[in-house]
Length: 103
Image (cartoon, rainbow, N blue to C red; front, side):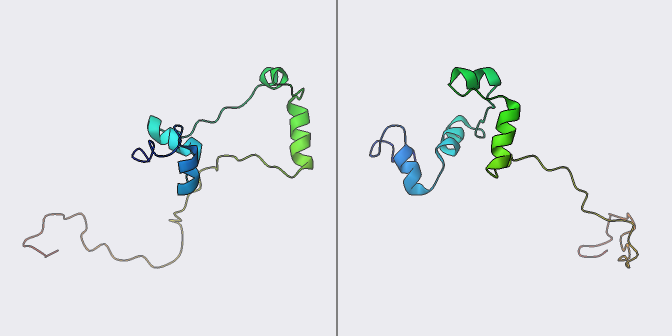
């Protein structure tokens, strides 16, 4: 990306399109982090000409089938209370072998 910057346009948007990379992802990579996404407050929406409060935004999103992305809760993936057979503990916490390749 950096080598092609002189050949392509200065901000790199066309190069991002050609390489299939998002512009925000490229700029985040330049900064050394992840893309920043900020929420707009009601005052910011009003200043931009969108007289919409939280309830209206929720209604419009619901009416148009738009759902907000949310972080998933932690899910435990290990079930230690099962009734299946468990492999025998061959080492029994004896981590000092008597010879190489010997347990």
